[in-house]
Amino acid sequence: MQDLWELCHQGEGPALFDMDGTLFAGDLGETSFFVLLACELLHKEPQAINASDVTLLEQSKGTGLEHILGSYSSAVRQGLMKEAYAITADYVQTLPYAKVLSACIRCFEAFGDNSCSFLFDGVKHSLFVKKEQHMLAFLQACLHAKKAVFLVSASPLQVVIAFCEMFALSGITPIAADTRHELPYGPGKVERLAQAGVLAAQLAFGNSIGDREMLQLARFGVLRNPGGDTVLRTLAQEKAWMIVD
Image (cartoon, rainbow, N blue to C red; front, side, top):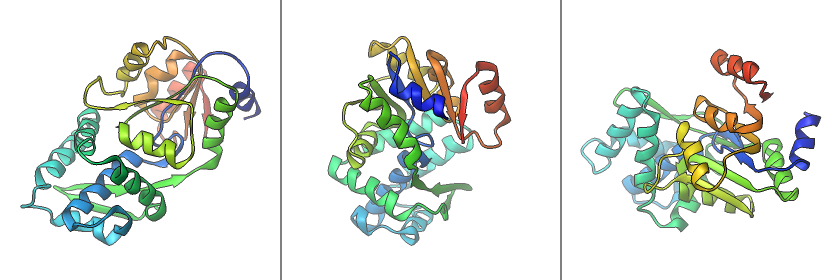
């Protein structure tokens, strides 16, 4: 761990960070998506949404949300994560930023114990985000060292910007789902970084197979909390990535 701290404070080259599941536990893009859908269904503001409200999304058949939730659930069921992420981006971009920010704040307030879920078309969806200060500290160390820091996420751009605002993270270049460019997931992360002029990096942090190409772009890859995923752990060993549980 000490070596990783030294790398954050020293050395040259950009630092690349995935967001969901890497800088905190859970998925802010997905959780805020469900909170915002509940707001529309119940005509409530984000700060008023709680777990029992979200479970009412199970009863949204016959409403204007049925197609959105049905399409999203179908993509998740088939493992088509790029399609699922695109659905969230399409929806969130139609909303005012202030509402998205409020929803993101509510996610960290109300959905930090991993106990809220609902079913739609036979697919279980969970809401969970929890701050993990030690991971934020790595990002902050890179910022303090004046590195070029890129936050590369398949979550909607407004959600990524909201996350940075919530935790007072300035000086970061966000690369996220915006419906106009290639979705930054898997090879798309490297493609979007190349468009931003980043062809190599000193550090890259990720937590899933969707971060593989970005991790390979860096001299030092850092894999966050692979858990029991033997494929990821094996890949990390092969590539000599550091593992932070």
